[in-house]
Image 1 (cartoon, each protein chain N blue to C red):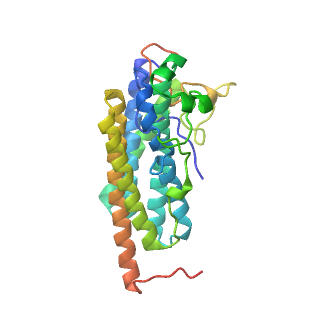
Image 2 (image 1 turned 90 degrees about the vertical axis):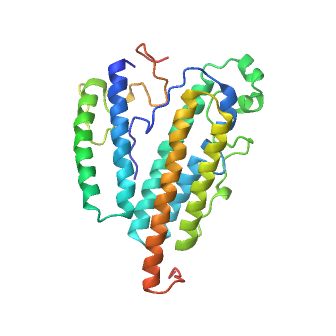
Image 3 (image 1 turned 180 degrees about the vertical axis):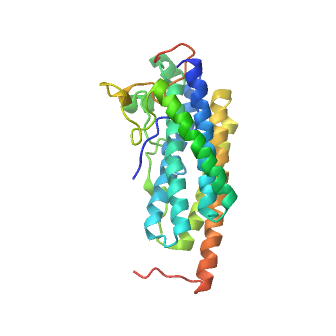
Length: 91
Length: 195
C-alpha cells in the first residue's frame, strides 16, 4: 500500500472511530444537541473524505458506491487484515 | 442487517511475525470472554429488551465487537504469516497447526473451541445488562493479561485500543442500566416479561 493511501485510510479510520464513539454516547444521551451537531459535522467530513479515497483506491462499502468501469472493484485487495507494506502490492 | 466496511476500526501492521504471542491472543478471538462471544451476547439480548435506548446500545456495541473480532483475527494472522514448520515446532504450536494450519480458528488459548456456554441471555432486563457490565470487565481483564505477556509494540498498540474500548462499553452499559432502572421504578421494580 503506498504511503498516501495509508495516510488517507488512517484519517478515515480516526474519523469513523470518533463518529462511532459519539454514536454510543448519543445512544444513552439521545437529547444532547451539541453531541448531535458534532456528529453531523464529523459525518459530513467523513463522507467527503470517503468519496475522495474511493475515487483513488476503490470502494470501502458497496451499499452507497457505484462501481466505476466494467470490472467489479470490490474484489480487489488489499483486504483489511493484510500487512501494510511500504512497497505497493500484496505480500 | 449488517454491511461491511472494508477497513479495520484500528490499524494492525505487525512487522515481525511472532507465533508465541498468537498462542494466547487467540483467546480474544474464540475464548470465553472474547469478541465473538461479546458480540453474540449483546446482539442476542436485543430481542427481549423492551427499551429503545438499551436496544440501541446492544445493537451498536454488539456491532463494534464484530469490528474488534476482525482486529484480533488480523493480529493472529499477521503474527503467524509465513511461519515455517520449524517456527511451529519452536513455539510449540503443533497441536493447533495440525488441525488448522496457519488459519485463524475460533478457540481459547487453552484449545477449547469457542463456546456459547460462556455467555448468558436471560431475557431479563436487569440480569442481561448486569451480565454485560461483567462481560466488559472480563474482556478488559483479558486484554490486560495479554498486555502483561506481550512485548511487541506493533501488537501492544491495537491491544491497548481494544482494552480502552471495553472500558468505554462498560460506561455505556452502566448508563443503559441506570436508564432502565429509572424507567422500571416508574412502574414497579421487579419487571417481568409479559410472555
